[in-house]
Length: 364
Ligand SMILES: *Cc1c(COP(=O)(O)O)cnc(C)c1O
Picture (cartoon, rainbow, N blue to C red):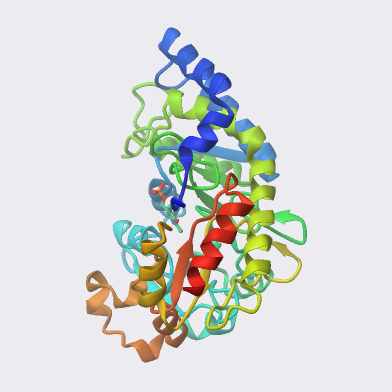
């Protein structure tokens, strides 16, 4: 049996006629840029999240960067980020001219450790970017309390957490703003690059919208220097077709994760992912840990099971951050886990037979 890491085609087949119709419609109307489709998706996604404003943009990286720009974060400022994430979380702090300050992750849940944040705060700190990594909600109540105490902004990186919740409240609605990616493989994915910003702050939403549209306030009135970060009509239509299915797809991921965890019971040497209490983990990725990763990955590959590593090098140890001069002792959890984590196939369409095959293949 072959078990691919993701299977975007299976999902397309499940909504094929509706999707083909929506795409044909955009082309027939040449509604490629701007227009009602963008607005419709923004409103639907805002309603899904329970926030007042969504501003769609070209990708998740842009949404992080534009939020920091809109908040006035730049040269001389510091922003706290978790040591373990996709590079965008830290990289965008650099691209606005500020400095990312890394903080280690929690041992159990692999998200930003609130207990370590205060030691990283300096007079230059302006914001915290918690990441709901793999679909697991970061400890937002604790992070918000620290942010409030120190007067810091909070931007939630929700690129992997569409639909994740704490106490029934959506991730993306705790902080000052949230950043979303709709990269094809994300839990809500376009058929190309796409992203968005979510916030309850009307002025902030307006500022991001302006930056994303060349700093224009009305046509040809460029009140600031911005950029082009548009969501196009095709992607907006595709996302609008998919959004109503997201709750069912999320539920299927959760069900599949529970099935995996059940199947892994009694398999020695493998740690399955834990879910933070009172929260909904949406399993963008199902990440196991093992001290024998190379051998396990090899065994799975030989059996036709694709795996991946998110991420093999934690950000403070990447060449691009060598100037920070960090050693593994600075981030012991991230340093240890980067050698142990392994992402196995996870998507709504995964079958019980596939999961049984994957788990059996880990046993060798
Ligand atoms: C995917 C991702 C991003 C960036 O999104 P793009 O749409 O690829 O630019 C940012 N942060 C995290 C944690 C991600 O997983």
